[in-house]
Image: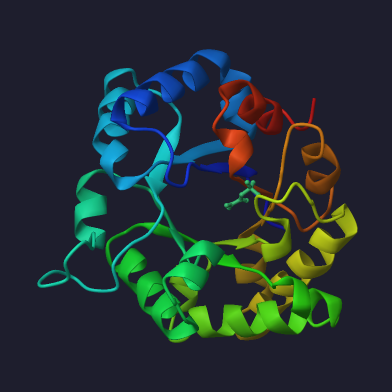
Length: 257
Ligand code: PEP
């Protein structure tokens, strides 16, 4: 079985201007040591306006912290006011991009077809998509979470070849747990993350499924990260609120201590 390097990614959402971004990344870099970076991949996902500042800091100080964006346009270039292309993100050396976050699906009407186009745009530009999937409360109450998430996964991966699919990161984020303080139990997270991996094996192969990192996201903090991360099919966390404080984010990164 493939040895998957755990990934802890911080989604800053619409927080921190470019000066605050520098301060937060510096604080994080100062707190982390070589051991942290050896056992965990650490990624920050700041707003677009901060990325150049983060890039300069990471390059200048040779930091091991990686970074990416929170969204990507499905289009290459042209008359798409307000959008940011994959080529622009690649030029800033973004390694990752969030695609299909529930806040984009909800407030910007992103459907599975658009999410699929964005996954394609990311790969076209050499950026790894962190594909967010997850059910709302009604679906969870009806016990249809696995079915719902697998439909989102199928939609997002349409026409994505195995050599790209094996590099994708999938973040299972139950919408009812995002920003609510209500975290899924480790068993809830494992149920859906293992179903995601099984579907990847069906769509591609067990080799591909073995390589893909499946994260859990939704009110992850230092104190609940160890239990969730102990699950077999959970390979990391997508962290919102708790990543805005360096100390708390470091606690999540050190979940195994
Ligand atoms: C998120 O927005 O991806 C997220 C997981 O947020 P929070 O950790 O605040 O629930």
